[in-house]
Amino acid sequence: MSKQVVKAELPDGLMNEAPVTYAVADTSITALQVYHNPDRRPSGDGPWNNEADKVAWVDAETGLGCIMLRQKNGTISGYVGVGPEHPLFGFEADAVPVGVSNTVHGGVTYGKACEVNRFARVAWGKPRKERYTVCHVTRVRWVQEYRTVQTTEDEFHEDLWWLGFDTDHPGDLVPNGRYGEGRKGDIYRDQSFVYSNCIELARKLKSLIDADRDTTAREPLGLPPPSEREEER
Image 1 (cartoon, rainbow, N blue to C red):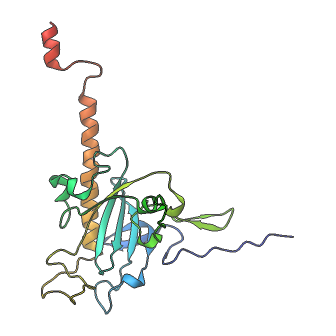
Image 2: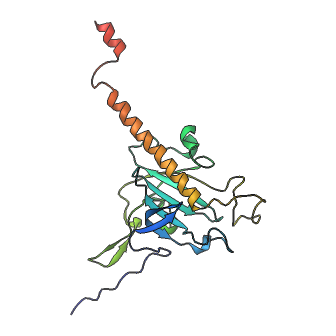
Image 3: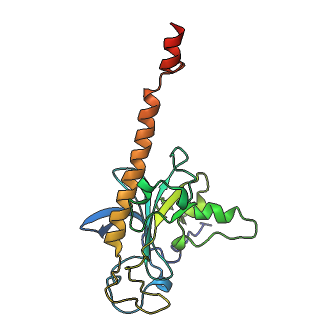
């Protein structure tokens, strides 16, 4: 008797089975995850009509994972993940140096570990649905042997630390704001705007890794400081 294999359904809101080309900011990226979250989509027509509600990718230049995620108020936030080797790994938002924080719109307002890992480790908590999480940026892939879909919920092996920013500051249009559409002249910060800020933050964070390596390389191995060597002569 042959075993019947049933193709698994994609997780709720996920639009792609494999990496796809995603157009943004007059360019295109290879999006590893594209989610639609109708419960967060602003009502009515607007610049959000053709936007996804979560896009995850790896920046080609820096190799850092990036996420654009729509919030409950309809705005889009941006995030960049760094590993344990990064000098800012574990830094909360208010501890991020000004020179880094000022790289993005409104400054860095988010500094937390991967949400899937963080929530899973709380005994009374449950992992959030991946379409809402700020977590590992991983390819959505088919495992042919079992015909199942694996997503980042399966990957707790490594923590990333995510630094991010919001677009609901004074002067920003908040589509689902509690007080209506906001003040006249407020600007909706679309995905092109958020993408550009994500890339700038990724470049800045990568430069800190490179600078840290250069400093380490210049330090003499096993030798006392120059002042002490002079005294020994």
